[in-house]
Structures are given as C-alpha cells and as structure tokens.
Amino acid sequence: MKSYFVSLIVGLSVGLLYALLRVKSPAPPLVALAGLLGMVAGEAVLPWLRDTLLPLLLRR
Image (cartoon, rainbow, N blue to C red; front, side, top):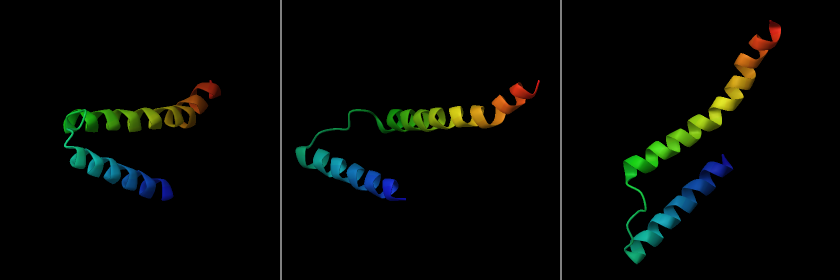
C-alpha cells in the first residue's frame, strides 16, 4: 500500500511541476496508458507462467 501512495505523490508532484513550467506531457495520455498497461501485463505474465504452466509441463 505504501508503494501506491508514494507513486501517487510522485505522479502528482511531476504533474504540478509540468504545470508550473508549462511543459506538455512527453507522451499522449492514450499512449502512456497503453504503455503502463503493457508493463503491468508483462510483469504479471512471468509469475502466471511459472505458477500455472510450469507445473503442468513438469508433470508430463
């Protein structure tokens, strides 16, 4: 839970800094969200493969 809070605070801080400096976000929101989704999915795939498919393959 602490990591979510820290991530939220850092994200808000960067957003405020961008607003103060009048800098546009480096990526369009849709592209940034798609990238984050890819990161989360990629992070979840390896443990899923390890926990689900590897035991099935080792039984044979």
